[in-house]
Amino acid sequence: MTWLLAVALALAACRPEPRSAAFFEAHPEVARRVADACRGGARRDAECQPAEAGLAARQAADRLALFKKSLR
Image 1 (tube, rainbow, N blue to C red):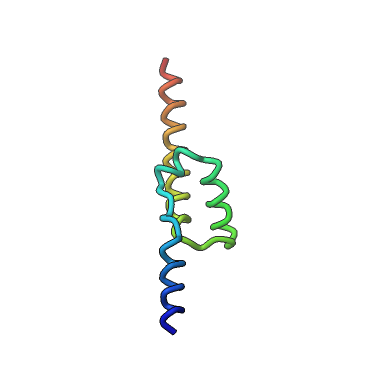
Image 2: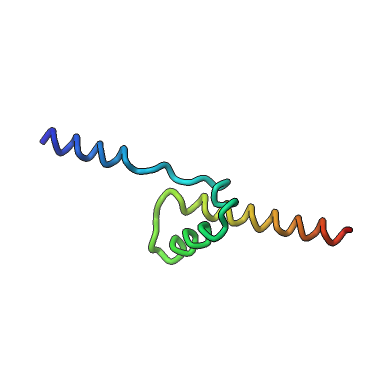
């Protein structure tokens, strides 16, 4: 029984930390794949919210850049 607990803890420790919204903002293709999977129900993990936030931040930055370009 103790070995089962040890294995479970070892597996839990091997999971990588969820990627941040900043990561997803810098990698919009990855963010789209994760967000689409989350919206479709294929994923339900800690990366769903950061992927959505990263996409929103990227879209806002793109809109701001387009606005600034139009002022020139």
